[in-house]
Length: 276
Image 1: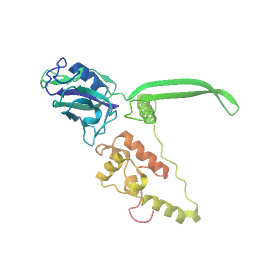
Image 2: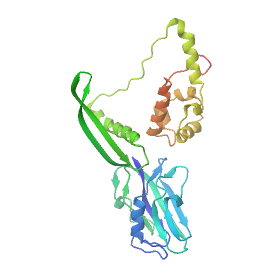
Image 3: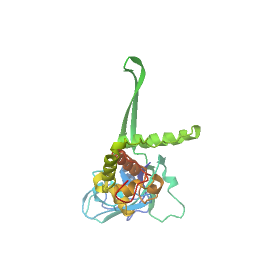
Image 4: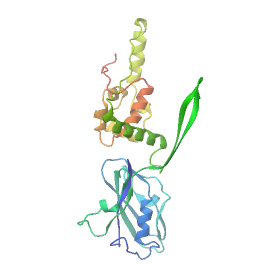
């Protein structure tokens, strides 16, 4: 899943075959430039971003005005070229989706005049290459080694793209298998070490979110639900966190990873006091 611009509206342009005085490119060329713009929409809703410029020169991704939910990745990408000091204004609709969606699916008979739907490429993965080689493990030589090379547009790192695609594959295979994910095995502490074990666990539970070094997005989502400590966090389960606004699978994986480093997990039953 990724983000892309699905519609644009340019002041002074009635349709995609229009030309604008003082702009080097015609609207068709601007549409092609917008299609190559890489954006990331952190929210689950449709967002609108704008670009305004009044001086001659290049109009780039860096000129786009966004809110906290939208990020422009390739800020040096050229959208248009102003040959005169004229007011240029363009609105762009950003949506989330998967794969390729043609402009015909974004258009409707009753849409506002001047709105131009464009083809959207939502996939953040631009290229994948793989190799399978024979490899040796200890004395056995009949093993295969899979090497994957993944290229993305910058809105997601290749490692996370692999994680997300693996989850999609697992969902497709679920109808054929009974899948259940077991939690970590908890061993009973040695009798003489109970006090020490409790103290270590308490110190972890009393850590703040800042101690976890989470991303800004994850921290903001959790703090909006008044989750300020690790103790409060581990008492929530995955379904509860996914109900939080802007808290998606990527953020959930980040939280899981941070807790796993501490030997903790979501959905734990822990005391609210100072003892376990």
